[in-house]
Image (cartoon, rainbow, N blue to C red; front, side, top):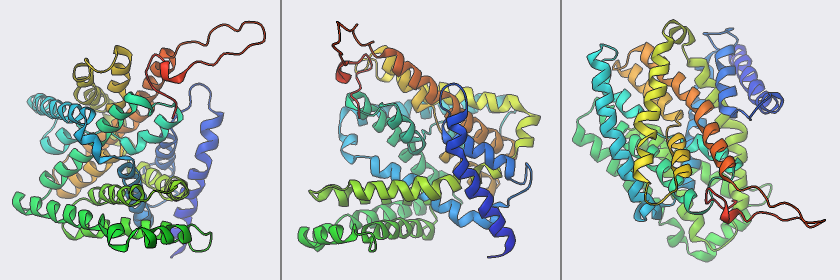
Length: 412
């Protein structure tokens, strides 16, 4: 590794380490760390101070992207798709897809865009992986509402990922479908490994792998991630599909064993959120063409508004019979939050020459603003909907029952 690469790595890891401190000292409501990381990436990147070069950390950034979607896939319970929450989430995404068609048609009529497919897909995405730590911190994943949120987020990531593999490719559509089926079959085959090893061997492997020096379970989790990333790359698919499938496979492995898997989950969080995922977000900021955004800020605001209209507003209608008004408003802003997939779509669109650089920069900028604004509004609505604790009588202290909160969300 040359000196320039080391300088870049030092700059990236330094801003990643400083991000939590910056968040803690800023006044007002907490800002998601991802926004600080992206802004820091812009500052140190080639469009800012020029202190770092993206090419020297591309591999680490891609691993960070993989970890982000692995953890999102790990949170996804496939049974959600068979429940009402899953069915409503799929209906909501279909409505968003129809609205996206109308939105891109309207933009094209004003000669605003020519890249129909990537922008249409971008407007249907939800950043479940990015939202998870924010939602966890605000106790918004418990109870019935949490099931609807997870289902909507999973569909908002999984369906666009499949659509990217189908439509943002130069290959024949039938070949693309075959590739997706092949990678999915490989993932399904991997889920049978615990059954082939037997419960006793699998139990012994997990117990021994939790030792400080062995860490076998963590290492095999990384192998699983890289294996499915390689599968996706070999079949010409976007690597985020392989990463999400890896998370789903890992979930099937751990849930099949009747034992405590929290140590493994803590290690995955530590490696992912502690090392690789911050590098991905900083690198994303380094590639953000801030000059294009500054020259046409209206374009960014248009995309930010369309994310809310196309992806968020259908929640008000779709969930009207299962969620109260406040929770539907929360869901509107949660589903309209997106980021990592916008980066992937913009990168693929630019690489294939089907997306204007100005639109790519504005989309990623709109995604960054959506992470900054929309989850904060949802969290504020959630906090305001909680009932105030009853007045104390004497020295007695009463605590509200979280399961009876106005938002219907039990504490996680």
